[in-house]
Length: 233
Image 1 (cartoon, rainbow, N blue to C red):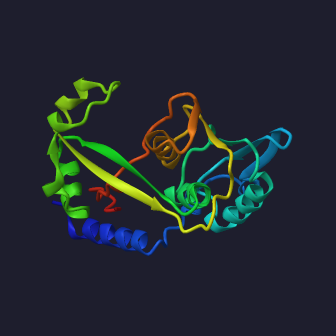
Image 2: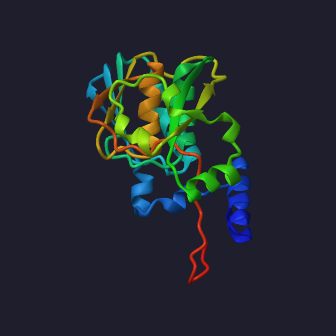
Image 3: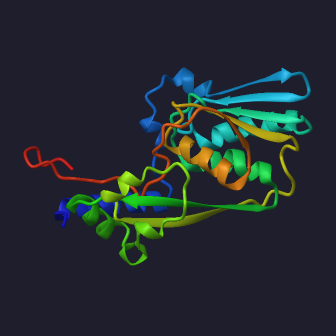
């Protein structure tokens, strides 16, 4: 079990997430100019195909949301809308949920299920116990649904898995755009961007173009440890 300092750190992190007070921008090491220019838009084919590049999901959600609303208004009747997140290394899942999915699906909802395989070890097991209390929901890996490209050799070190379903609801009166949605991804698409790609594939929200993403799109939180010498958490 973790010591009291680590338990306290987990509690502060949990409260911050619940109250949506985590400042994701502090994790973005890009220059302020990059933050201002986080979104790039132009027509690939005039009045038919819109290209929207989003460099990071760690930018200010509300600020970028206003920019995207203006773009959607311009391209609402285009045949195709292309989102390029091939250089996007993630940030907050709230960014793409609030600024991309909700405006586009209109008054609707989309659900997707993720599967997390849990590795053996005292730290990982203590982490699950202290921060999530999901032991009763763990299932043996042999019950994992079929995935064509999964590496079954990993099952030796991941005896259990956990699944969770997230539903995105939208109260928008109408769809912000009417065209077909495309999303460009690459091996640099990471973290929250990886989860966005998974969402698109799982729900059919968009057609994916490009290469396999880098991963790390799902997780139960950050594993915190107290270093023995410095006592830092």
